[in-house]
Image (cartoon, rainbow, N blue to C red):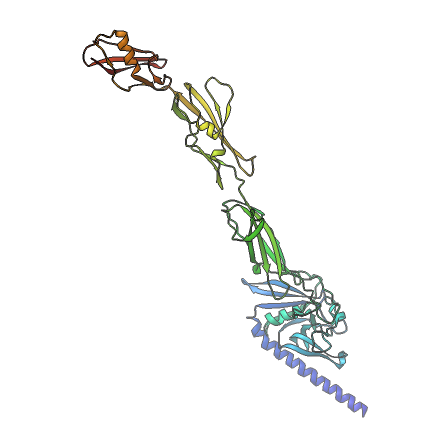
Length: 472
């Protein structure tokens, strides 16, 4: 009788096995067509305990996420091969009497037959009853053939991978293209990766943001806030760069000694504080704050400096010359070095002094303009030009026609005429011409309205002009 019962059990077992194989084959065949259009492919490295998710993008399968896993022990190995994902359950009773009893798993996805992806098991259908000792085995063989995962990873597969997703189970000494993530440890009945609000054991790592870019930017240049900023999920070696957002931008107010909300502008000097954020449901939110200074350290420029010819006696050694750096005018900060004709060394002048400078000599002046960057004094600009000073012909002007008496002597008349004249011009006297080297020449009489020929002789040569006087 016992033999009959035993035989019956064996027949039943064989029938169950056949049904499971048929069911698994049916699921696999049904899922194969779907896998062609699925955007993920899960590869389970049973030797290293890593599941790598690949995403189909740009005509290629690219690795996007690595997850620690516990596959079957040597006595209960996980099946090798390629399959299509079958059914999915939010919670599912797993195990059985032959596995020491029933337990529960979250985010269950069928690989094939009774082989499943699921979270590390729970004693009951309660998130606070997980086996911490089994969680701490992730990355090593520990299951009865299923692929155990941290809750957050099981959730990711459940959320992203449709039924029909391609699954390959293989063995390799190499963890995979994204490596093997670092394990977390559990010390209570809660899964430390479970994002459920109120999880007292929540230890999921934050997103890591890295900024590989200059912390100073030249005034007026281009600056892209997200260029050079990368991010990753350290829990799954997952690239999150595309999820980085600029969370806030603030500018330092020097008078109030405080940062205020602002937009970063390279047209405004100052220190900006930029905060980046990555908010992602499969790791803790990560922040990164950097400071960026908009500075103006470029070499200044000097404009309109050119060789010139000026009249002797004229003023202004700067004229229309200007200086600036990108953010401000430096014209008034210029130093001007002038070497006059016959001199061997230059004399330094401020901008205002150079503007009032008089070219009192005839000849060539060497004029050097020099200006420094306000923020980087070692960055300076200079330009050297020449001013050629030439004497211009003086001008004789008569303020009014003098009146003399017919009885006046010639000397008296000449004195009256000289006193009515003014000499203006480079190199000549300026003012009353009484003692300015004027001579009267020509034929003239001391009767009636008369004119006289006046000649002024200076070191620049003689100038002759006709002037009037009246005889009464």
